[in-house]
Amino acid sequence: MTNSVNKCRANETPACCCVDVGTIIDNEDCTAEYEHVFATESEARARLELLTQAARNIETTPCEINSEISKVENGFKLVAKFTFCCGAECMIFQLKLR
Image (cartoon, one colour):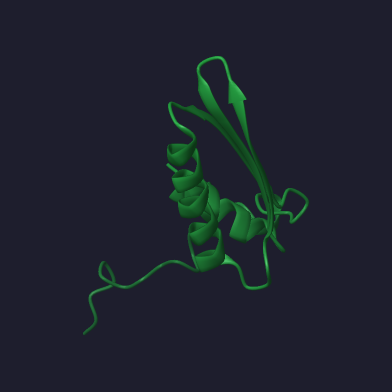
């Protein structure tokens, strides 16, 4: 005799919090932007290298990276834009930055 309490009832009970992944990742937003002011230019360049390597580790096709380091009043401002081929890669990259 099978114990019905231990039996999986996934097909019998609809989940109340299901969302189609296509409504979250729609591939329209494939660009991640990063902006930060560093004390030195070498710190800004080092961070850009880390961000670039992180993007390269995620990409399935080459990620387009545009960056600029400029002198500002408080130090050196790094502005970088990473454009991935799909929204999922962009999301993974952004999660890795946290």
